[in-house]
Length: 146
Length: 276
Image (cartoon, rainbow over all chains, first blue to last red; front, side, top):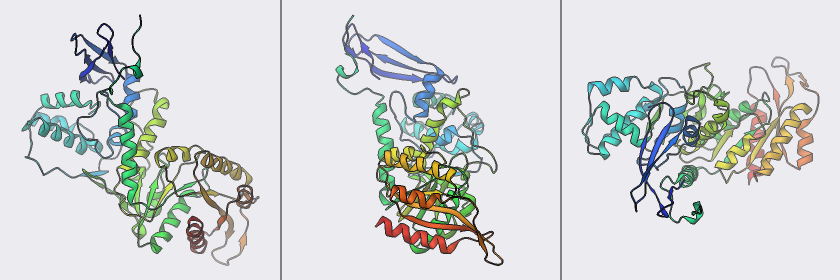
């Protein structure tokens, strides 16, 4: 999908993505010439079309996790997976609130979600994951339902 | 008002959705680089013992190929291979992928049966409504991940137990371009024969070679006295073999409580011979 600023005849560039958690998503684009901004507001049906293809509007900023779509979509058993934790980078701290929030994620997908948040924190030089960090990651990465 | 349309606007779109889908396909190709032969086992009809044939053939091939055999259970809503091969989780996940479960004979197994609670049906978390619209796409996504994200490693054979339905071979063929050849499983009845005929025609439409036909439950053999009787009217295996000029790879009797090791050995021999 491309967005064209008709007045400037310029392709608009992707700016950011929002996932409000109600099944919809929004993405904003800006004309590099006149700086006009628009927001594309997708309804749940359109959002699902994208999700079910396992792709991201605005492109991917982190590598796709193994079984990412399956683990996001399937109601699976708690002990289906053992996720290896990444020990290559600096250890990331989790605040009490963020740990509590993580505990609410179904165990079938929790290990993967934890890894995605940790990778996001590492990418952004963040040393402690807080609910605010989780919110930004969720929005930036399009983690609907996580 | 006139303005340029998609193809007239030069430069890629930032979302690169088509490229993202292309990358998903590439991951399948890269993951299967170590797999010598992908063999779908299809039937077009449920209840013909396709999963039994898949599991038994996998065990026989694993015996011959030092365990270098995998089974991908593509029957997401009715997974049975896990139980037949006694494969168990949990599955280890790292950045490179998901380690498959190891079943009897060292067979590497991936199945929805490893992800669901025992006896629970496959349920999708999202969307909340209109799931019938998306189910096919979600199932195709899971099949793609079973192919691309599982660390299959170096295998002589990857058997794919396809779900019933003539179209299931098309889903696989869309993801795997170099299928070595499909095995079509039927029982002797003409009702089954007609369903399997549709599956064979679907395979041909998708440019998938069919290696041959397996006629399962061709007879009932008493495990006490060895007396054999026919279980079904008809000879669908032979009829399909003649009509499509395909070899009848094996006729497998039903022997209560016993694996038909002789017939499965014949099937493995015929498969290897016809693939080469």
